[in-house]
Image: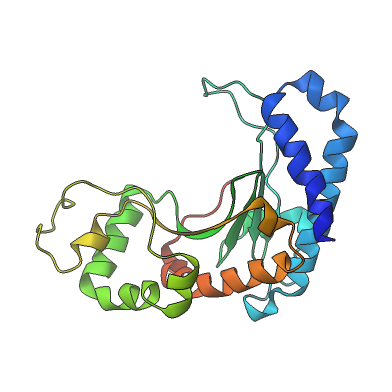
Length: 223
């Protein structure tokens, strides 16, 4: 099965250079084959996912974001995304609890979780929680598995201390984050490896403590 993901990588690579509706329609059968192969792969992941989360009856199809882009308010009018965006969790892309993001893209595949786009109120609340007890988050990011797969937290940061916090606050490095993300990159060769499904599950398992930490304040995913 992993070799079938070559269908997805090849199609998405060609779409990157031919992002037009006429080309897409002419190659719709390739898209459908690529999507079917990737859905089959996600079904395999979900069958192994109980060591991470109980996703219930969530199907692979429910995990996928649409490939069509919303271009109404964008200067970039390319009609299609050049990746398959997949949410692994109960409810798939509509998950409201702990969930994990798989981005399948030629030269840009990654597995991630955390807080991507918090509202000002959510960010204020997150910082208050961190400031009160930074040791909890530090324990998560310093854990062996987190260090192995992710290294450090990632995301946009402030250049100076956020309002209400001193520059010498003991958790100022954490408080400067505007996003709180953990990301693990995967090469195209890694995507095509026989153990890729097991690898995704292992990475998500390492992400779970971070997801659990942010569970009550994480924004809902949007399609």
